[in-house]
Amino acid sequence: MFLEGTILLGSEFNPIEGSVIINQGLISKIEEHSTNSTDIILPTFVNSHTHIGDSIAKDAGYGMSLDQLVAPPLGLKHQLLDQSTPESLIFNMAKSINFMEANGISAFADFREGGVNGVKMLQESNMDSSIQAIIFGRETTDVLKISDGFGASGHRDADFSHERKTTKQENKLFGIHAGERDNKDIDGALDLEPDFIVHMVHATPEHLNHIKKEDIPIVVCPRSNLVTGVGLPPIKDLLNHTTVALGTDNVMLNSPSIFREMEFISKLFDIEPSAILRMATSSGADIFNLNSGVIEIGKEAKLIVLNGESNNLYGSHDIVSSIVRRASMSDIKETYF
Ligand SMILES: [Zn+2]
Image 1 (cartoon, rainbow, N blue to C red):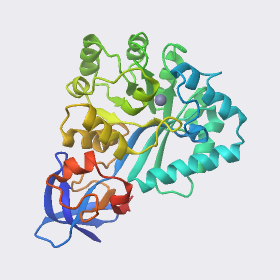
Image 2: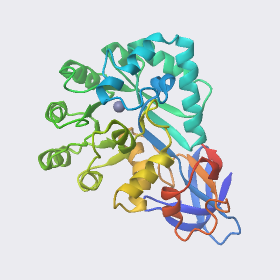
Image 3: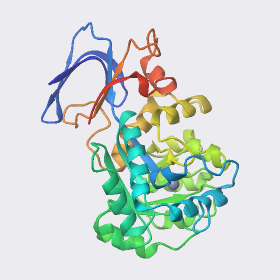
């Protein structure tokens, strides 16, 4: 099969007119030619950090502090999780997964609470979708038997060296939150040599040099940081030092839409639209070892087709900028996962 239109080619997203030819799920050929199609073809998004377990608590706790909202065990999120039945949790998580799928997200990396059972519930909620759930369990290293890795809450909660070691032995990924409310838990997290760190709002120049030297990727969640009032991550500095990907964090705080995350970043920071689109696509694919996130021969054909004639996108002078700054789910014509 083939898709025809304006193709955002390679990691620079250079728009060319032509066709993407797909063979057995892979991009087998890219042909440049003129076309009457007004479709825009781009790679699917990777949502590199979510907690979809709290889909049962959307917009609860307006105005509460970060600790009041999400700190275990008494934060509002955990109270609401405790009060929910497994059926309700699974149903609500499936709703968020459907929403992400409709938003062009082909993979999401979730930090799942609830140990082995929590991981199983997320797997069950994802049974009917074609989106890839990359699941990071916690609470016990037994999760590693069925998860993609271990997602540590943060170094201030525990040492996590046993979990780190076991994750490495199992050849899985280890991620950890750090530098969200202050910089006190960053050194401890860096000492664990994680595969990636989430947040890094309060990274110092020393931390930036460390992550550059050790090549540790960072996942930033600026909308979440705005809601919890902890500040904003130094995204430009982070981009100058390492791979930076985008996550939407807790569903209770924000919709898991990468379109919205990109728009916020583009309007809050002085960062090239193409760099923001890379954070939303290939950077996450790199962190989680996915063969997607960029339109190149040999990559998996995980693609979004946007309607270039939609009321929202019609007349754009810079399509990459328009995707980052104004596109939304309603502009999606088709997705191929
Ligand atoms: Zn998180």
